[in-house]
Image (cartoon, rainbow, N blue to C red; front, side):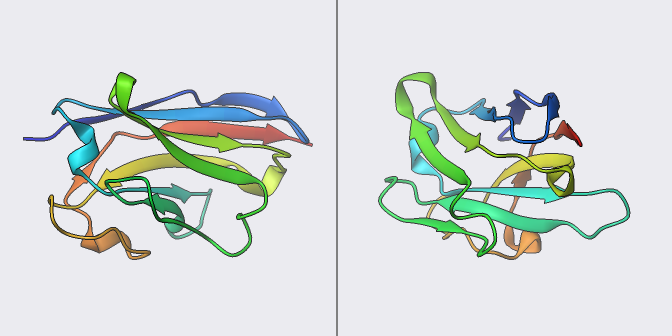
Length: 125
């Protein structure tokens, strides 16, 4: 069973930055594509970004591609999400997820097999 753990969330003022980390109980995590999703208060879960197992392909939600960056740190067996110029509308619980190895990450949350418990990101005006 693959376990994913997110960390790095917190409270930040508008315009600030946070870096989220997703670590896995399995090694190497680089066998897995990984996606980040978020769910704001009263909103549906939405796609944020994904990265392939090799790190060679990165996909972003259209509205986030210039402020968020996803990358792998294989030495730490982690996938990171660097978020900058955060705005109140970025507030929500951020989840990392992984599909079964050999299956590609997509923008659709129900195509992922493994999920972390989420980390809260709160952006104040």
